[in-house]
Length: 137
Image 1 (cartoon, one colour):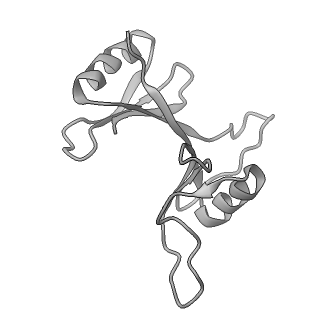
Image 2: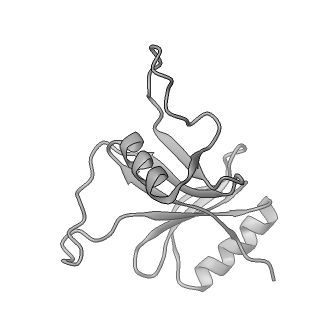
């Protein structure tokens, strides 16, 4: 039986560039082509989604801009840790197979976007409520 492949972990951030730069520096990662810091010659840094990779191009982390986000209070549980996982499959048949598996394992569907021709996907919550996506890449 095949399994979905982990693409990268996605972190929500109010300031995606600041967050990406922190992790880039900390882990020695590089930006995906097109996500680099603007060269400073009047370029606007308006990306809302950034991806960091290993030097060989393997994805490591992505950052998604949000309007606001409560800072985690962990280990206090008032505001728990915040992130989600992106998982990929090679085609729509595999997406359907993994959809059935995810539901059988206890996931619940949060969003069904399988009718999107460019990127069919499901967003689920795991049994503890943590969101994750499985999509065709």
